[in-house]
Amino acid sequence: MRLVGLDYGQKRIGIAVSDSEGRMALPVESFKRTKDLKRDMRRLAKLIEEYEPAKVVVGNPVALSGWSGPSADAVRRFISDLSLEVDAEIVLQDERFSTMEASRRLREANMSAKAQRQVIDATAAAVILQQYLDGRQA
Image (tube, rainbow, N blue to C red; front, side, top):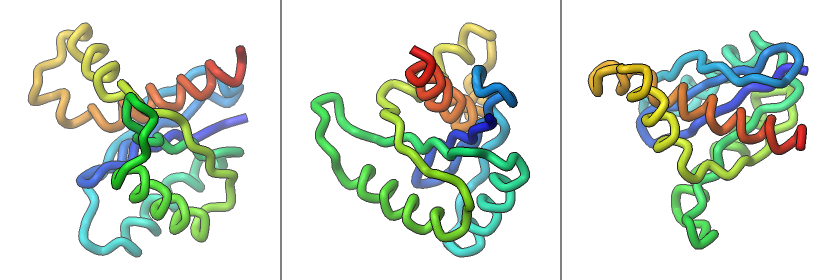
């Protein structure tokens, strides 16, 4: 069962996909958002549908305290819009520390800061998706 993971941000959306067995998450790409939400949503939906996922896992930006703020509200609106475009179950996954973990992994791979900026969002999406996969298999 293939899954898609998303790291939704104000400027970019990171995308990851699992292997066909749903065990390992791999970064795919990130794309810069535009001011045209409908166009972005169609583009994202088209990309997601290429993988025919059973689920789409979206990072839920909650604070360390568990508090849900404006970023979490934006993600809920995003999910509402995405659910109209994608024929897959959409679930939330706590994304605390996902960007920090992605950055750590990229540094360990000796990637320069400039190169990291190109792939950090997709890598964060892979971290979010992998956490979901690991939690499901536990």
